[in-house]
Length: 193
Image (cartoon, rainbow, N blue to C red; front, side):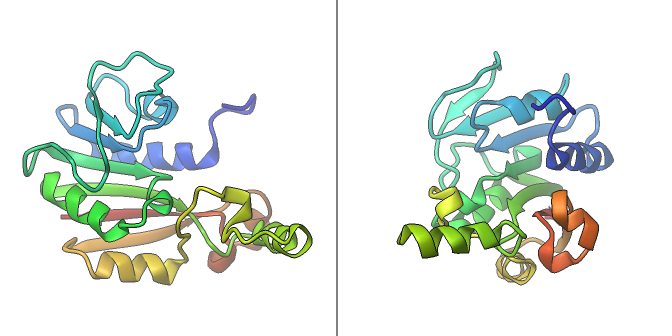
């Protein structure tokens, strides 16, 4: 975290989670990485973290080393599933949604955050491609497999089993000045089973 507090997307996620979580909500955080987001977002709740490797910086009781496309949990195990800056790293994005849907209880909610492929920093990406002559699709984020715009997310979730899906922009830096949805920095998706 920086000295001004947590990143904006973490604060937006916390606000969304406060609307949908209850005291007894069981939560699965897919792709927890170091566990920093989970440490900020989830206090005193029934939480399971998972990722491909265990590299946690915080002491969490329930960690499962697994792929987001093949979750080792029973059907309808969780009230909330989060995937915060995860889906852009996975080729089988639809499989991630299918697994999240499977492990969610009826009326459960998936919360997903991903960068906007059209964010203002895309100019820097284009300059990197031009001057460094890189063949990377996303030179600023070499580990990204795919980046999403609003329509990409609506199509992805529209092809899934989720009933209700709301895609909202997260504005930061330059995009906060423009308030143009197409130039937002990130999208947050709230999808209901």
